[in-house]
Length: 84
Image 1 (tube, rainbow, N blue to C red):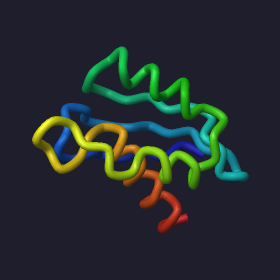
Image 2: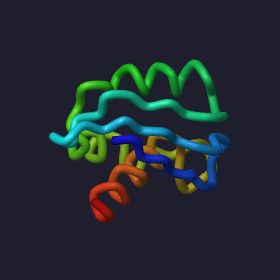
Image 3: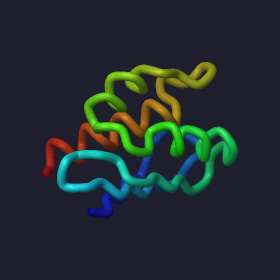
Image 4: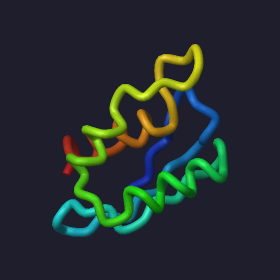
């Protein structure tokens, strides 16, 4: 299932997840942000369970900001679970 999320407080503008029926992340594409880093994160979380990604990425900060792209990925997945 495709799930789209609009992050806030970061440079990226959209996150597009492909999540299977067992809550496994099949793919993540991020529009904007630090291209190489986000491609790397996308590859690292591919095949992971949503809860594991949330646990690992929640609370990661970017400089002086109170969030980051990894934290926004975790927030997106929390929202996905809440609305599923």
